[in-house]
Length: 268
Ligand code: COA
Image (cartoon, rainbow, N blue to C red; front, side, top):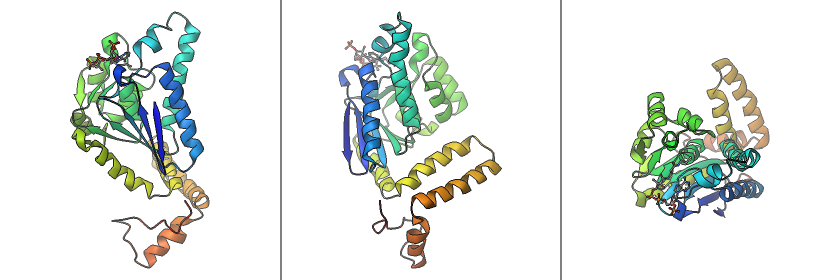
């Protein structure tokens, strides 16, 4: 696994191309370390996750994570706990996460695309919840990812049949924001990243947190939560939305419907 940090953007490359980026225990340990390094950096606003070679990820390494440790329950538990730990961390990560799905995405690969906040895929990327094909249901969060990213009939169809679907179909279902020809994947992802990195990182972080919280609540509770978090945002950003953004609007230097305020005079 490789990690590149370039100012506000971190890119994690899953790097076992000869194994279709199947996630083995070493990769799971590396992912936890990559997330540690990104969090420690503090300047990162967006994390892009992608694969080297022709695959995003063929999911969990079926031999190293399941077959080999299976006879020793504690070894099996510990091996997979490392994976489950970073899946949970990535889902709740403070920076915005973007999956750049460049090819095969099976099982844990669907999970990974599904837990990221945003996703872009090549039109020809191939997705599948293939667990049923080796006798289990999608576990470790993969059923959650299917249930939260695909319409119900499609989720159940792919969970129950193990059939594959393309990047273009993933866009139609809503698993990815956009599917583009493979040679446009980097540019399409960069366009999204550029829109994100000129935003206040505290606001980005709270925006995704509030979205996730409010999905699971009713409107009165959501309104109360919004208002409490808005004051938290104000304090943590030094009231940037009023002192910078709305002051610039007062001077008509931008139209918030069409563009964003200039953060050059803001702190981070
Ligand atoms: N676990 C372990 N090894 C895997 C793997 C996985 N999830 N996915 C691929 N590999 C290995 C292959 O076994 C092969 O190893 P080898 O070179 O030692 O024989 C190597 O990666 C290359 O894969 P190969 O099958 O030759 O490539 P392909 O392009 O013909 O097919 C896939 C690609 C992804 C369709 C196929 O490898 C596959 O079905 N993988 C399993 C996908 C899966 O069920 N994932 C769910 C896990 S939760």
